[in-house]
Image (cartoon, rainbow, N blue to C red; front, side, top):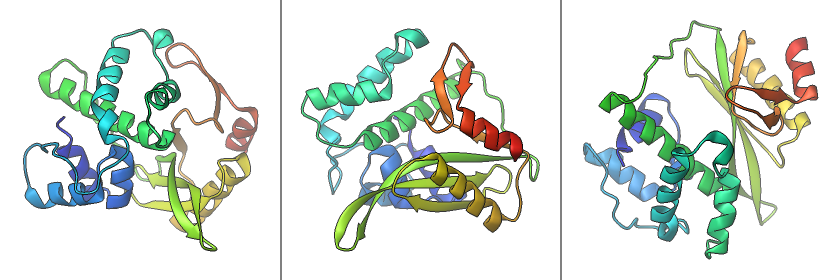
Amino acid sequence: MALLGVIRRWALREGISIRAISRRTGLSRNTIRKYLRSGAVEPRFKVPERSSGLDPFAGKLSLWLKAEAGKSRKQRRTVKQLHADLVALGYGGSYGRVAAFARAWKADRLREQQSSGRGTFVPLVFQPGEAFQFDWSEDWAMLDGERTKLQVAHVKLSHSRAFTIRAYPLQTHEMLFDAHYHAFRVLGGVPRRGIYDNMRTAVDRVGYGKERQVNARFLAISVQG
């Protein structure tokens, strides 16, 4: 996979930490550091110095993702279903790691389509204050001597790429709204619109194409904002 360009953009242009890139791609941090230092055109997927539990299943997951991409939206397995199928095969890792691998695979596939002329590329250009992006990720921390899973809220301005990160125990509406409040307080204002993934605190149901059933609580706060 031609993933090095994505890794370099995340690390050098967007300032994303190596730990976060490791979580998104499923690669070890040492492997990512090696790719960034090497300046190679394309990473060679050797056995990472510190292996991930997903490594033995990466090939199968890539084949599944390729097969699902050729199906209609209603026929595709969700990432949660893919995670469950991997668990049935013996995978003992988290859903978050599988989701990160799937995001990286889709980003790489889009880049290949654009470079080969099979995809349509529309540059995303934003004016100052026009938009922000919000997403959740998972991470772990030692709290009171116990390894605890955290839900990490990421808010990034689409023009300047300035961002905030804030960790919570759960992905609830209260914590979603709190993350927005503190992000806008730190960033110094509220952009005109937000860009969200299909997270469960914002979208109750994903329909055909761009059809979405937006959560009532989320919509009420968005309208008031």
